Image (cartoon, rainbow, N blue to C red; front, side):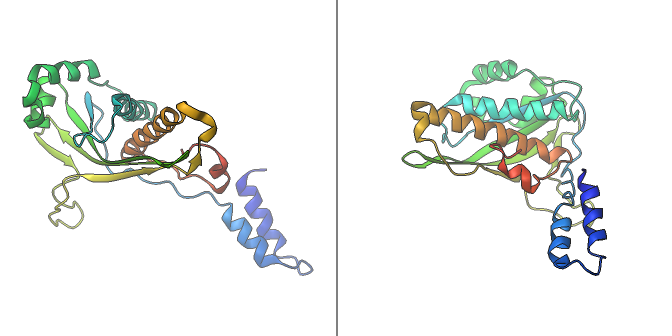
Length: 230
């Protein structure tokens, strides 16, 4: 039976005079109504995109975690058909970083995007990172600051400088995204625990950043029984 049918049945039953506990049934029926979708925060243009994920504070020892966040972000944008015109290969960004050396950190995103022939840059800086609480207890969490630079327009388009509805000048230069997975005892997983936790966190963090750019639905009550939080 579909969720909609279950809700209708609950409402019909509450109309029967001999049935008791209708308030409880009605409440349960309402709880089954699907949650409304979460709208995109920015209409990302469908054009050649460079995705940059950086850990400028050096909090993550394993560079593969950063690559996994990047890959997850790009995969979600592809699957949701937000970007269909392609991405700048990460190998080209790595080569440019090597070419610029120490000057890379002071090179603007506009310049990097132009050098790599990107039309826009989706930039995410990791500003907080946590895996283990102690012993075998893991509570993975990551925070990122995200912005989008339109290379063609030569400016940051997300977050905008001015609120399009009110015309008020905005001070934020990036949008915070926080990913937090449930607490898990991974003692039984031994040496592999950290790798598993970091991989799951990176995948979810990339997805959470991508969700800024497309409509999605929050997990329903029954979905929370799953291992992941997608």
